[in-house]
Amino acid sequence: MNIKNIAIVGGTHGNEYTGIYLIKRMQRTQFQAKWNGLEIALMIGNPRAYEQCSRFVDTDLNRAFKNEDLLNIELPGYEANRAKVINQAIGPKGSSRTELIIDMHTTTANMGVTIILVNDHPYNFQLAAYIKHKLPNCFIYYTSAKSYTGEADHPFLNSIAPYGFLLEVGPIANGIVRHDILEQTSMAIGAALEFVSKTNTGECPMPTNSLEVYEHVRTVAFPIDAADNINGFIHRELQDSDYQPLQKGDPIFETIEGDTICFADEGVFYPVFINEAAYYYKKIAFSLTQKRVMKIKNTL
Amino acid sequence: MNIKNIAIVGGTHGNEYTGIYLIKRMQRTQFQAKWNGLEIALMIGNPRAYEQCSRFVDTDLNRAFKNEDLLNIELPGYEANRAKVINQAIGPKGSSRTELIIDMHTTTANMGVTIILVNDHPYNFQLAAYIKHKLPNCFIYYTSAKSYTGEADHPFLNSIAPYGFLLEVGPIANGIVRHDILEQTSMAIGAALEFVSKTNTGECPMPTNSLEVYEHVRTVAFPIDAADNINGFIHRELQDSDYQPLQKGDPIFETIEGDTICFADEGVFYPVFINEAAYYYKKIAFSLTQKRVMKIKNTL
Image (tube, rainbow over all chains, first blue to last red):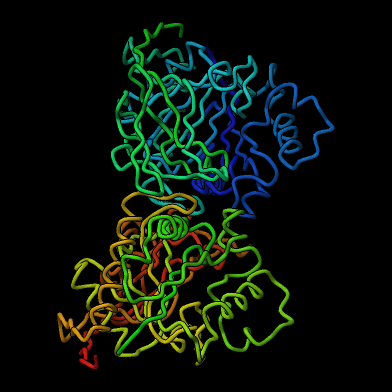
C-alpha cells in the first residue's frame, strides 16, 4: 500500500470549531513539512455555516455526498452545491485523486475520541487498530451505507475516497474550542499520518490481530407529546454512558411530567451520540450499536 | 416585605433549553399549587428563537429592556418587539405588577449555579444569601447597569421588576437538556420561592450576615489576527476555572500558532463566563469580577 494524497477537512459542520481551528493551525505552522512524502490538502468544509455558527445553511453537508445527489445539478441548496465543489477539489467520488480523507467533527455526547469508518476496507481497520494502539481509550464505530441509510451509497464526505475516517471527539458544546478536544483531535490525526507514513515505507505496524468495533444498528427517538414536540430528556442513568451496555428494562428517558421510560428491546446494545444537540431537530435521542471483535488481516 | 406576583421566564435565549423544559414541567405538574399564596406567571421568553434553536433572531432579547428601547416603537427587530410584549405582560418596567422575576439561563462556562443580581436592593442580597444557604456551592454575581454598560439603565429582562435574579447554570452545551442542570435549576428556584413564602408569612430566614459577591468589572477579548478573526483559545490553565483567582502573569490564551498569552493587569480578579459560546460573535473570551464580602442587613 502506498498512499500519497490525503485531505484533512474541518468545519464540515460550521458550528464544530475544533476542526476549523486545527486547519488554521496546520496552515500556519508548516504542518505539511512534518509529513515528508505525503501531499496533504487542508480544507474548511462549510465556510458559510461557520460564518453563521450553524451546523449547516440549508441541509446537512455531511449527508450530501451520495452519487445521485452529486450528479443532480438542479438541487438548489448551499450544501448541495458545496458538496459538488468539494467533490471536484478532492474527488471525484469513485475515482478520486485523494486516497485518504480525515474529516474532523465534534459532538456534545460523551464519546471521547471515536474513529468512524464508512466502509469495510481492511486498510481502514488496520489504520483504526493503529490509532487505538496509540490512543487506547478511543473507540471504533463502523457505519456502513447499508446500516446507516438502508441504501448502498454512503452520504458522508468521507465516501469520496476509499480510505480514511470521520473523527468524532467529545463532549464539547457547539460554537467553542477547548484545549483538550483540540489536543485529542491532533493526536488521532498524528497517529493516522504516522501509520500511513510507516506503511508507505514498507513498515508493517500491526499492533493487534483483533479489534473491538461498534457497528451501527439504528437510531432511537425521543418521546413526543400530542403536538409532536419532544416530551422528555435523557435519563440520568443513560446520560454520558456512551459505549456502555444497554438492555431491556434500563431507564432511557424521563418525561417532562416526570415519568421514567425504559428500554424495551431484547439483546445488548451499546448507545452512542447520547444527547447530541445536532439531532434534536430530527428528534433523535441516541443511536444503538452492537459490539463485535473483528479479526484484522494484515494486507499491508 | 410581602411579595405576591412572580414571573418565571425560560428561553429568553432560544438555544438554552433548560428553562423551556422547566416552564413546560411547571405548566403540566401543578407547580403553582405548591406555592400557596404566590401568583406565578410562567413564560417562554423568545419562542421564535427556540423554534430556530438559536440564541436570538435579530438581536439579544436580554439586552432589549432599556427604557429608551422599550419606548422606541420604531425598532424593527423581532426581539425589540418581543421585549415590549413581555414588558406589557409582566411589567411595565419601573411600575411593574410583577414584583419578582426569575429568568432562567444556561452557560457553556463552568459556572455551576450562579445567581446574577442586577440591582443592589437589600432584599435581593438576602434572597441570594438564602439560596446560598440551601445550595452552598452556588455563586452570587452582581452586575449593575453601571458596571455592565456604563449607563444607568439596565438592559436585562430582570430589570422590569425590582426583585429577583437571573439564574445561570452550567456547563452545558446549547441546544440540549441534561438531568443535572435541570435539577440544579429547579433547586435554586425552589429555594428562592421558599424564601419568598417565608418572608411573606413573617418568618425571617437570615442564615448569615455576610455574603461573598463577585462584582462585574469588564470583559476580556480573545486575541485577533490581522483579518480581525479570533486567533486563539482559552489556555488550559484558565479553562473551567471560573471564580478562581487570576492575576498578572497567569496564562489566559494559546494562539493558533501555539504562543501563550498571559494576563497583564495588576490586582486579583475572578473570571466568569470563560469560553461562553454566546460571546464568540462579540469576540469576548471571559469576564472579570472582583470578590467582596458584603454585610447583609436584615430589612425583612
